[in-house]
Length: 322
Ligand SMILES: NC(=O)c1ccc[n+]([C@@H]2O[C@H](COP(=O)([O-])OP(=O)(O)OC[C@H]3O[C@@H](n4cnc5c(N)ncnc54)[C@H](OP(=O)(O)O)[C@@H]3O)[C@@H](O)[C@H]2O)c1
Image (cartoon, rainbow, N blue to C red; front, side, top):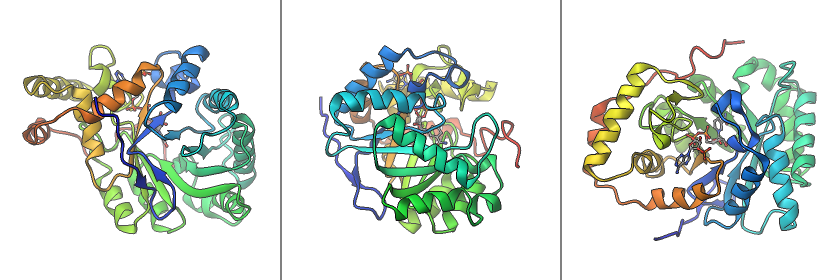
C-alpha cells in the first residue's frame, strides 16, 4: 500500500504541507455538531496515530468543543515534547461562544487561550473563524478581530493569517481584501455540493493557500446514508440521500469505495492545496491514506457528475446575516 504524500507549498508561504490534513473538530467532542461523543482516550489515540502517519498537517479551532480539541492536542504535544519537526498545526480564533463577542479583545483572548491549551508560544497558521457571525465592517474595523490577528503576526506569535468560514459570497469578500494568506471552505466543494467553485477560482488565481474541509459533507459520504444521514451538521434532505445512494451505486459498479471518490474529488482539484478530513478514531489515519491512493477509473467522475449536485448554500437556513 503506497503511503507517500508529496508535499505542497502552502500558498505563498514557505510552509510545506501534505495534500491531506487531519481535521480535529470531532476530537473536541461535539455531539451537538456530529451527533456522537468522542471520549478523551479515543481522541488521544487518534492524535498519536496522526503524528505517526504520513500526514504532516493538523487543523483545529478554539471553538471545537470550546477548547477541548486544542486541550487534547496539547496533551499529546506535551507527550511528544512539542510539535514534531516537519508538522504544521493550524488553529482558528473565535468569537465568545456564549456572548457572541467577536471584538479585537475577544480574538486576543481566543489566541492566548489556544496557545495555553496547545502548550505553544507560536502558531504557524491562525484563521479568523466563521466571520459570518459578525458584520464584515466590524471584523475589519480598526482595533477589531483582524487587527488583533495582524498584531500577533507582527509580533511573530502567528506565522500566517487565514480566513475560514461558510457563506461563499462573504468568504470571497474577505479573500478580496488581500489580507489573508489562506482560506478554508467547508461542505461546499464535495460530490454533493459545489457552491464553493467561485471562491476556489478566485483564491487559486490570487495564489493563496486553499483548504477544502469536510470532503465527506461531515460524514455521509464516508459512512453512508443509512449510518449517517446528515449533511453539513444537520439532517440531510431527501434529494441529498437519493443522490448519495445513486453515487454509491455508481461507485460499487466500478468497485471504488464512495469515500475514496469523495476524498479524491477534492484532492485532484489543482486549486486545492490540502483537503481537511475529520477523524475521531486511530484507524482512520491509515484508512484515509488508503482511500487517497485507491485507483479510480477516469470515467467515474462523469458518472458521478451525472447523478447531480447542489450549488446552493448547504447551511443557508442555519445562520442569519448579522
Ligand atoms: N469553518 C471551518 O473552518 C471549518 C468547518 C468545518 C470543518 N472544518 C475542518 O475540517 C475538518 C473536516 O470536517 P468535518 O469533520 O466536519 O467533516 P468530514 O471530514 O466531511 O467528515 C468527518 C466525518 O467522517 C468520518 N470519517 C472520516 N474518515 C472515515 C472513514 N475512513 N470511514 C468512515 N468514516 C470516516 C468521521 O468519522 P469518525 O468520527 O468516526 O472518525 C467524521 O464523522 C474538521 O474536523 C475541521 O478541522 C473547518
